[in-house]
Amino acid sequence: MEERYHRHSTIITTNLSYDEWQNFLGNKSMVEALLSRVRHYCHTVTINGPSLREPQG
Image 1 (tube, rainbow, N blue to C red):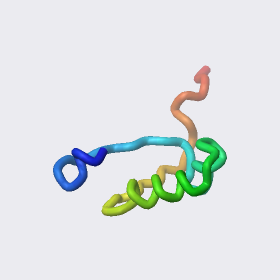
Image 2 (tube, rainbow, N blue to C red; image 1 turned 60 degrees about the vertical axis):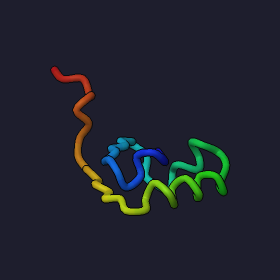
Image 3 (cartoon, helix red, strand yellow; image 1 turned 120 degrees about the vertical axis):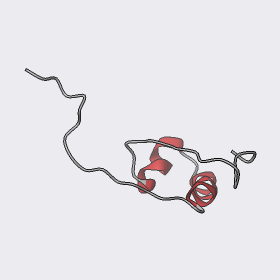
Image 4 (tube, one colour; image 1 turned 180 degrees about the horizontal axis):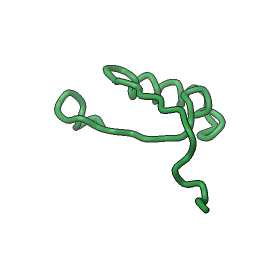
């Protein structure tokens, strides 16, 4: 990530909100540091709606 910073775009997808990352990764201070860096100069797109992975038919 450091090598890409200010040089290339990076897309990160997740079904977790930022508030849920601590529960998943476990270490509050590390998660805060990670999110501080990831969210700097980022555009967050939140999509709400039904899952496309739900069984059909």
